[in-house]
Image 1 (cartoon, one colour):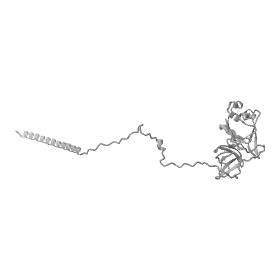
Image 2 (image 1 turned 60 degrees about the vertical axis):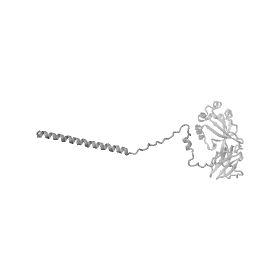
Image 3 (image 1 turned 180 degrees about the vertical axis):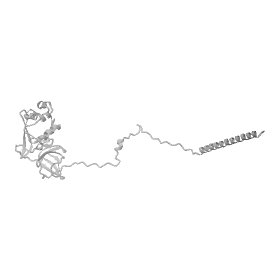
Image 4 (image 1 turned 90 degrees about the horizontal axis):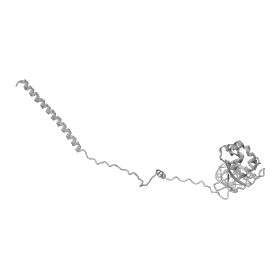
Length: 292
């Protein structure tokens, strides 16, 4: 065998040995990784299954809780109830020294009633509970058939009705009466037949009413206290309004006619839906409401 053939044989045997060794190393590496993988799996502790919390949804069979009922629960306690502002009218009340004259009253229940008072140059109708427009803290507490009770700086005082005559022979004060107020609808067919639309007539053609009424001022000294009403040439409207000759209109909507100019009265006609009148008839104060 020549040398060339021997060399080829040796080289081929060395190549096979190298390949075999390489494959062996790869096999060892793979087996090692497989071993450690199995070992790590075997060493991992088994955890118990996690428990899931369940919430029971309220059904129609359970108790019914509303948000409003929960909000109504006084979590921080209940606030103290405010004391009721009630004042008992005392007995044997002293007469007031205030310069207030009672021109008339409409006696009512415990919490109602109207008094027409004159103080200084003002004449105004006051309801129970209203502050009287004089110096100090003075309030009308009650209206009785023959006197009124006021609160003057937290002290109860009374002012009696006094009979006084005026220039035209009409009593400026009146023995009171608890007469119920009359309500008259000016849109009644029989009234509209006479004057048409009441609001438009008063605003645009007030002279049309001159044939139904005649009004003259009633004075107490130099102070106007109201207007005496008499029927005109046509007395039909006068009767429909349930007026009597000699009736004295004292106030309109709680404001004395002595302080209510004609321009202000016309402005009221543009906005108001009714007029509240206090009318003095002989020794009686009547309340009338005219609905427009």
